[in-house]
Picture 1: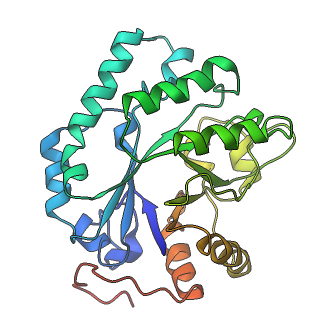
Picture 2: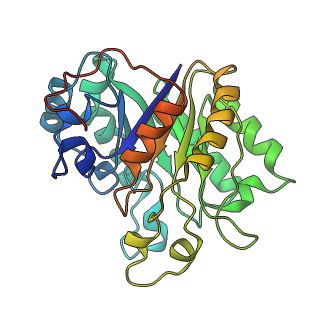
Length: 281
């Protein structure tokens, strides 16, 4: 099975006759899954999560990003927290997403680690700590430090993630010898394989100006690039129960058009979507 979605639902005007914000219900008329990023900044209230559940079809699922304290982003900031507080964040997070868990609407929890989270004994141990804190939940990890992909480390990375039943994100982003991580199509959990597409804007990705966060995902994949990705997706689909592709290249509102094009290339027809109130064209 192949599923396709976007990061957030509100910022894709092509789904709403050119207008923003787009409602969750309107988004769910086109895609069977969405990635929630706001949870990185603050654990959502249970009431908010319940509202999400009410607005989508029964088969719709959410990818929810782990909170910044769960991914240790605070270690390079001015507000480093204690181990006890970190574990408390895990408890609060699990409690907050219980409506997704009980309704089978949680696809996975996405741990997007910071660039300084490199492969060492301490960080490997932390991956095991995460599994202990969330023993039965689906977990996906995205590394942003190239040490996890080094030829001398690749085996331990894959072995560890398979042992923990974690899905490793296949990342598509600008990559050089000094920055970024490579596109590495590996399956570490046969239940779910995930590809996150950040775009290939080398200049915007590597030039950390004041507008870096807005410009780094300013990229539209060409039809040729999407066709090449489709070939890889087809191969992964033969070995995985589900391959989920998330488009994050939305600085120029290109994520939805690219995702819809990929759906067309792969000849996908999602069942159980919301009713469309307006025609896309």
